[in-house]
Length: 136
Image (cartoon, rainbow, N blue to C red; front, side):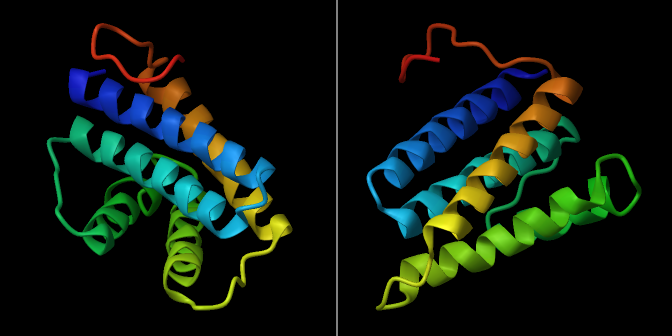
């Protein structure tokens, strides 16, 4: 695991913890959005391992599918989870009325947990070093 991958996985873990906290507080749309970012950071970590970096969310999602899900290097459902999570995040961030239910937020959080579990199985566990940040 590269240092950048480790830092991305730590960021994903922090985002997941924020999602859980927001969900407990009743902020389901914000929780779903943070769960998306946890998955997004994991996707970036996998791409970083291949020397690939993108500036747009759509590029990261597409490249993750192309390089990891489509050839079967990772479970295909992870790509679907990421695409679906982006849709939920956009809905949560841009709709004027709260449409993300507690159940949908929990689904996104569970999927983010799966993403992190797969990442740590494949890349190794991300542990905190000297970079600071929250406890982990």
